[in-house]
Image (cartoon, rainbow over all chains, first blue to last red; front, side, top):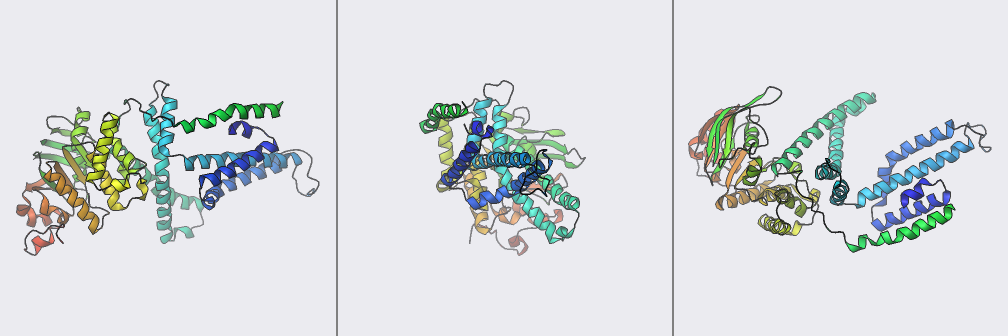
Length: 224
Length: 248
C-alpha cells in the first residue's frame, strides 16, 4: 500500500506517507534521536542528489533566485525525488528496526519455499546472521578506527590511505569471524535439507489485510 | 572412545599444524590438551569434531569417521569455541539453544524439553528471552555450553574455555565442567593456561609444534610442562598439594 502511494508524484500522497511514517515511529517507540543520527549519512547522499537535480535539469530559472542557475523543474524534481527516497529510506529503517531477524528469516524461507533449487533455509539464515552481525561489525570498525587514531592515523590527510588502514583490518577480522561462524554452524549440525517448520501467524497479523481493499479503493478513486 | 592415529594436517598456506598425532581418549575421561600458542591444539580438536579434513591419518569416534559419518559424529561430539560470539547465532538465549536440536531434526516437543533442560543446567532460565548481545562474557560462555549440551553429546570439546573470563566466570565454567565429567561425559579441554583446570583432569597431553610430546597423569607431567612453553601451576612450582580454582 505504501509502495503504491510512494510511486505517485502527488504532494498529498507524499504528505500522507510522511505523517504515517512519523506516526509509526512514535508508535514503535524507537529512540528518534538515534533514528535521525543514523539518517545523517543518507542525508548527505540525498542532498548531493538534490543539488544534481536542481543544477542539471533544464528549464526556466527560478525568478526569486534568477542569479543562480536553478531551474523550476529541477527544484520541483529535486524536492520530490529526495522526499520520496527519504521516505523509502525511513520506512526501510523502521522496518529493519522493529522486525526481529527471526521473523525476516521465517518470511524469506516462506517466500523461497516454493522455488526449487534455492536453499531457502540457508538464505534465510544468512540474512538473519547478516542483520545480527552488522552491529558487531560496526563495533569492530569503531575499535579499528580508535586503534588507528591511537597511532595518529587520523592525522594523515590522504583519505585513501586512511580508508586502507581501516578497511583492510576490518575486512580481515570480518572474514575471520565469518569463518568461525561457519565452523560453529557446522559443529551444531546445520543442514539445508531439514523440512521447513514455520510458526503459525497470529490472527492479529491478518487484520491489516482487511484494510487493503478499502485503501486500494480510495487510491483508485483519487486517481480517476 | 576416540582413537586418533598418525593424524596430520597441513593448511593451504603450507603450515604443518599437526605432524602425526597418536592418541586414544577413553569414555568418560577428562583430558587436558595443553601447549603454547600455535602448537596445534585447536587444529586437533577441530579435526576430531570433523570440522577440518586431515591431510593424513584418521580419527574414529566410537567407530565413526567424523568426515564420512558427520551426522552421527555431530550427535556424539559437541564443541565449545574459544570466542562465544562466533558460536551464538540465535537472537535470544532460548532460540540459540534450540538451534542445535532443530538441526538434529527432532520433534518440536523434544526440542522444547531439551532447551528447558539446558537452560536449567546452565542456570540461564531467567535469561531465556534475553537478547544474546546483552549477555555478559560469562553468560555467553554458559550459553555456548548450553547450546552444545542441548544436542546431548557424549563428548564435549572445549577450546580455550577460560579466555575473556574473570575469576567468578572461570569458577562457573569450571564447576559446570566438573559436573559434566561427574555425569559421565568425555571432556577434552585445550588451553595454554593449565593452572585453572589441571587439578580436575584425569590425564594431560602436551602438544608442541604439531607433535604429541607426552601424555599421562598430571602429577607426572607437571614439572616437564615448562620445557614445552607451558607454565606449570603455582602449587607445583611451590611444591604444594594440588589446589583447585573452585576452592576459595
